[in-house]
Length: 479
Image (cartoon, rainbow, N blue to C red):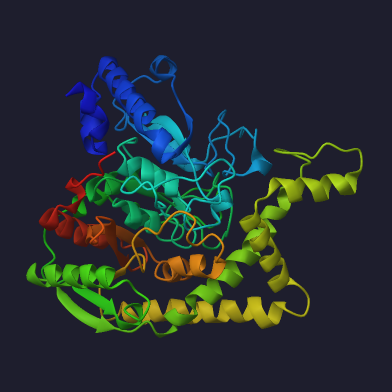
């Protein structure tokens, strides 16, 4: 048993960690597992080997997550621990504070186990734009794990982690969850504090959990959710006990199938798996109804105006003056220019330039203002749909994991990887990716459930009912 402790779920780990000896055994098992497989997967950028320091400083005192190892994406600030967004420009930056989600986890006794690799500043859908190294998919090491939270998804899939946190601006939790065969939640905008999340698109970003099953996801979201006065966009809405919604019962649940998501370009095996999931729901007593989200076709264009504009603004602060990388020179202008030129990777530069362009004089009204108006129409699509249905079911990604390098020289093709996930960020609604099978190559497929604002409990009920019927989560990659 002891050598396979790394395979535990979050719930199992929380129950197992009744003594310091058990913590040491679990920590050793996970560390050994990372040592054995991370040279292939490359999910991690940093690993916390010091379990003794945790034991010395963290009394148990009935804390619900005491000792549970949590892996954290590289863009979430951790006090005293380097946080780089997988970018050269933040190399050496050690935050003097914890992100609110980290503080909440520490308060509940969790152990920060590792920092996870990601696309630089969360710009990407494949985890190939990291300044450190690409991350690989545990199901096929020649394929990408998705992005930008690819490290977070891959470490959970590879059993190098008990659970992980990612961030989702346009699908960056859900798309890698789908490609790696794990569960990933983007909560309602405002449900989880963004304080201490290094910003990409401030009106879109949300931190979310990546876990081995739906129950773990509900536990971890409950641990990090809630109002935070340090985040002006944080919603002052009560946080329910999400685990109470984990019942195997969807009788009477109205599930919408958006016809706009089943269009040419989707992998036939992905479409077949999602439609089969809809049939399972019907057999379980749910009602399936075809709906329309008519402005979906504008989602990618709107997103890459709004998101790049916000990224351009947010990344202006990385100038070599206050923190991170600084180009060594006595000339101030050269310092600014060379720091940003050498500190940012190609995709970061591309998005900064795009964002600066759409915000510039003469183009602001033509692009940014118009995009915000269409964003409102996308939001209204969801509001109208939820008058007829309780949740929306669709693919998470149009394909399974693609080959490493396949889309790196084709940015537009890469951007289209998020075509199904972007709309929920633009509208602010919660969305959850759940494994729903495998393609003929043995690669995971995921479906996405989208719900009403702050109605994560209904999504968890629907996801749990399907998961406990089909048991896809029991299959593991052979590393």
